[in-house]
Length: 334
Image 1: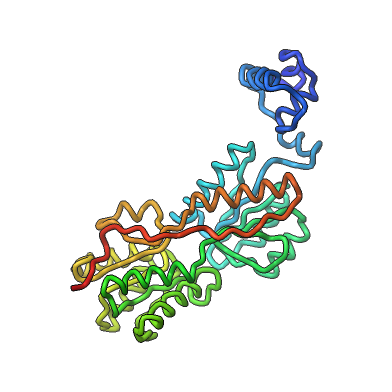
Image 2: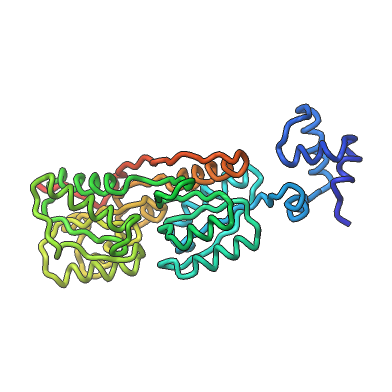
């Protein structure tokens, strides 16, 4: 039979209320008492009943996380930061895959509502009107990560995509490149697709380089779409010396196509990506890219959410710092 909170209190020679306060990180006991209770819990193998605790304090110490693609390297890095912070603060995480274009978002929100999560991290997707209305009805805190909104009471954590894309393009320009192609993300996507293309275009304009539509192809941020977009650019018979891809997975698609076509990187073609996922360092040659501190962004979003859950106060928006990571896929032109 599993030990109960009453059994823990009896063995530790403290009240049930004290054990409960220790479990919920509340005050009202000495550090010596806390250590004794924690030691007893470990010795007895006591597992708190989260459902029962939720009925008492109206919390389940569970947060929901929504991703459009949980299997991507991008999502994996964000989730690692979220889960690590949650675990260290005694919260568990429920992950939902909303699919591309948010096909299952409303259903996922309903699932999280039924599971009585205390809050939601909404990742890398536009917070549409219909989603916001559901979240208002649920009345639990929400934090966006790698997304943004003007809805009141919904803070976000993200990189300034226009500035980061501008600097990636400018980096290539400073290396002597003037014929720079771009593979953008999902066409019309207001969160990362449009701003990154706009940053690219502005950098070209500011340096007196014509921006031609035929030098831009679009993917969906994934590897396969990067391959397809690169093939499309090559079919156009353009004389470009560099490609800026709006995600690392698409940039790796560029490298794959270049390898199949016998195009040497960086000797004949320079490539820069965006995200700095773990895979960027593993490919050959290692990918030069824009670093988004994804782990840190996930952790920051989770920290904001838990603070909102526990204090009831709205957190502030955060702009994460990006930088360019130089590896081996860009060369300076003579």
